[in-house]
Length: 166
View 1: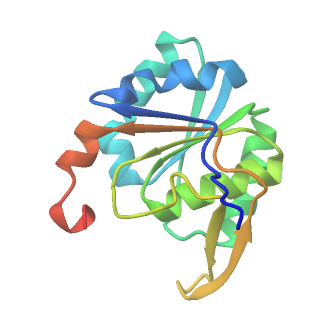
View 2: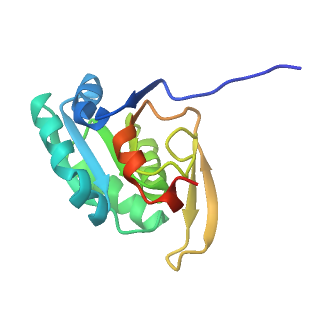
């Protein structure tokens, strides 16, 4: 029987890893679309912005609307194209990360993922779970590869509510 391991191309983990997300995005280009919901933007947006600036990456921040839907993927894909983005960055929980992966795939761009919770496999998986506008399961999108880079900041993960570590 064959055994296969499929994983992200690069996985970075440690305290304050998010402070270096710009370093890991830069090899893909100097224009990034950064997707996160309002809670995450308020929590770590300044850290991501400072890192983008430090590594000379022009980051356009866009709020995720809360559901990984075809409509949201299309909206963000059009924005990525309009911004001439060269890399997609997703920061947050599973639905945000699944949306970032879908946008990157649709735009044929690399994706950098930074989870803020541990209770999801979205950061490293080669698929997205798609929902309807009402939040019901719709379908799966499967990708030929896993995310290009995963940046796991253990300080952020450790400070998440206990229910999000389970």
